[in-house]
Amino acid sequence: MATSAGELALDQTAEHQRLKEANECFHPWRKWGPYLSERQWGTVREDDSPDGNAWESFSHDQARSRAYQWGEDGLAGISDDRQLLCFALALWNGKDPILKERLFGLTNSEGNHGEDVKEYYYYLDSTPTHSYMRYLYKYPLNAYPYNDLVATNKARSRYEPEYELIDTGIFDKNEYCDVEVEYAKAGPEDVLIQITVHNRSNQTAKLAVLPTLWFRNTWDQGSSPKPLIKAEPCHAGQGRLHATHPDLGDFALHCNGADELLLTENETNTEVIFQQPNQSPYTKCGINRYVVQGETAAVNPSQQGTKASAVYNLSIAANASSTIKLRLTKSTPETQNNSADQEFDQILDCRKQDCDDYYARVMPAGFSAEQKLVFRQAMAGMLWSKQFYNRPGIQKSAVVSHEQL
Image (cartoon, rainbow, N blue to C red):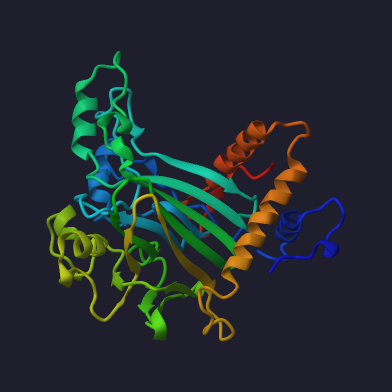
């Protein structure tokens, strides 16, 4: 709950108080944040090639089937500051050949101006401690033009303009959804998650929204015991994913109203990547294969693993919206029976107000309404761009950030 105004110094806001508590190690308000990359594939962080060619070493096509070594990726994602447990969004419009789990882009050899992400996503808001964050992703309702983007850009010379996603016509007739993701912290390790899907088209939109929870694969490297996620279906549609890690402890993702809970392992599909037999039938791409290709055997029927998705099959009327509410929280005897929506709207509204109060306090005087919006979104861009870097040989890794406002 919010700190009352009477408990704060006159020149402080609730967010200033959280910063003070974090800086003095009183409460770890920065422990959870947007430290998850939106594109880990194809970067030097995952380059195992003998010649330093990161693009060819780890492609976008491999990313859904090959476990990362040094960091994870996902849409609008968050993680703890050691990136042991990750949360992000996956989407499927029923027409794409793969789930939309991460940003797609061109490699250096494919783009006529070098590597380039071909997606539309926006960092809209964030406080310094990430007590409130807001993000927007524009998701086409028709098949994403993967092949067209690659072929057309590759055929162009460096003197020609880039062929962008909007140039493909995929957004014509407003046939897309605005997917808005909001995070609000009820406590340092209690994160409310609201996903609102706005159908901008003039027809009913059907799509699957898959909030996904998974552990970064540290066990295959022999650095820690293998953690576990188990599905715990509750009464009245109050589904829950329970995640246990030997270092991080226990967390629960409350996912009320989910149509399915799907579990697999965050482990490489060696048959696909290296043409070698899999040690387990449940691999990193198992949820993709289940949802898109209908392979029911690709997910674990015992509903346990190291990667899990709650599936929400939405049907949204023309120009209407649908909202999903989840809660990722430290699992204790006191919180075990809490539901996702306990004081949800009240806490979310309070954190939004905290964010408004903070920027009203730190923003330069005399700004117009437009300048205030630019300032705030610029700060959001920096704060959302913090990133986890796993440094081999060093036990605790770094979150690289723009921290000071």
